[in-house]
Length: 316
Image (tube, rainbow, N blue to C red; front, side, top):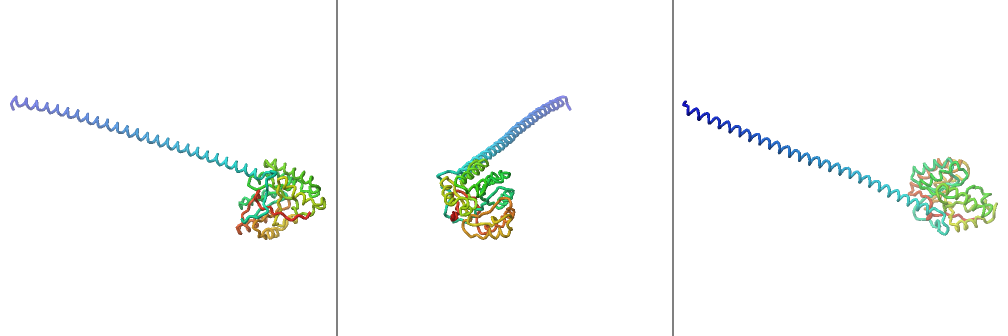
């Protein structure tokens, strides 16, 4: 090989080395560009993903806050609605002279108005529990005799039952001595109940009913006078057209009370029962009485201003 040929080969190899170096540089640059592009794309993807996650978190937090606010609003609206309903209920039940109370015509709806006299006592709470169990409402004509259980008046009212006045003393001799004596006693029980539930109810029941003749022993013609006078003062008196038979004595046999209490067939039944001391068998009989009428399609309601008042004939 000549010297000239060696030179050409040497120059060729140098050119090839330069090309390889340039190619390597280009390759390195290309790889760098690719890596940079990947990093940029990855960064963008991460930013987008992070933004989406943040947006999701913000949306979830907003939805949660809106749900809380909605719940609070609904609860407040429900509370306001309940308060208005309670205010209306109290207004409807409050003694208001000049505003009519009661109806002398029975409705067409099959209804039982359970009415409990002479309480409250230790028998009142078990009766309230039974009424809750059967989703039944009732009316309690209360006295001031057993004040150890006086708080049950409010308990009954808060459960949706009606509170009526049955006189404070339940002493025939005392309250039927004169018209003034009766209203003194009625005013006393009215104020006592007002301390418990905030108002004087317009619903009353005469001890012995308006048809009682015992009152004649103390004042002739007093029931005739009182039956008109109470209505003029804004009250309405409620007798009954069905009896459980528990008024005949202490702890009348349960079967007797059930038999008597399930014998009525009126469309509107105003039933006389008692929740006083000595009426434990009334408590025992109550579930069977309720079940009987519920099976016949009756609703159990508390007395209100529109309810049938079931007046008796007056004999004094």
